[in-house]
Amino acid sequence: MFSLQTELIKITNLTAAEEPLSRAAAILRQGGLVVFPTETVYGLGGNGTDANAAKRIYAAKGRPSDNPLIIHVARPEDAEAYAVTHPLYYRLANAFMPGPLTVILPKRDTIPLSVTGGLDSVAVRCPAHPVANRLIELAGIPVAAPSANLSGKPSPTCAEDVIRDLSGRVDIILDGGDCEIGLESTIVKIEDDGLLLLRPGGITYDALCMVCERVRVADAVTHQLAANERPLSPGMKYRHYAPTAPLVLLSGEDNAVLRFLQTEQAARRCAILCYEEERAALQPNCLIPVGGREDLEQQARRLFHALRQADDTGAEIIYAHLPPLEGLGLALYNRMIRAAAHTVMQIRETGAQQ
Ligand code: TXA
Ligand code: MG
Image (cartoon, rainbow, N blue to C red; front, side, top):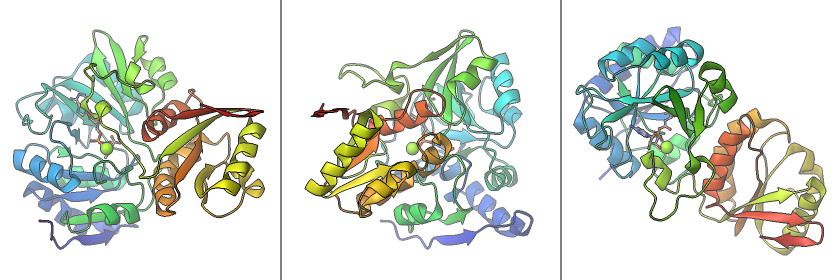
């Protein structure tokens, strides 16, 4: 079914890339699919005003079509044509756009229901990555784009991971190197005069609070939805970012966790997403360093690729540290707790207890 000749274009210098970007923009306008880098993760773009392009996006990803797409614009004010904006939208735009923030707004008729999974709201984002921003500007259309992974895989943060998932399924892949943030955008919904945080990302809870007095964190950010609960954002109900081997998150005192990991390495084939500080004390095989203990930015940048690497080791189980809930930690926590299907092991001095 998928046998497209995917063209791979490496972009290192934006001014030298006008010709390929114009070509990619024309393909988007004509209903084709173009993968592009953003500051968060790579996006799988199509024409956001074209119901058929949306269908092609869902098919290429193998994604259920009730999970709505984000539309990407080159300037915050371009949202006017596709969504009913709000004064708070412009306060957010002034503070954080272009950047890793997505705002859910009431939809206008210019966006087909197939793009929003049948919802009467639409998610709008203005990416900061120069390749993404220039591509959208040249296309002159809103670019609908989910993360450029196969459904159920971690979002791709480098061209290598995109190629593995989507080669032969899209027309063009623009390789812009590694993504700077590494986790998908923060998603907020404007409700009354406050914000509901649906997905934490590079724009933290504290940063949102500087712009808006009332910011509420949706329960599903940190907790599992009950079987009968209706998700506020359709994406919340899917088991996302999931490696094939079970992922177990470890919580507890640093030395106790390290001793547990040493014992496990001796007992079974496990992959470990470890801190730099732990490296010397662990066996090197299947060890995947994700950054310094306190370096949440580096951990965010490396997480998704690390999960893919952990899977590639063929280990029977993957261990990682439970992140803190503060700052960028909340976004890491949200992604990791879902990848782990909420499996957290509390490590105590005397042994492990779940
Ligand atoms: O950083 C990002 O946001 C990346 C890059 C490519 O921009 N995109 C991305 O898209 O992560 P995706 O499709 O993988 O995730 C979009 C999330 C989904 O969980 C979806 O359910 C939610 O946004 N969403 C989209 N439209 C929505 C709406 N109208 N109401 C509530 N949630 C919505
Ligand atoms: Mg996604």
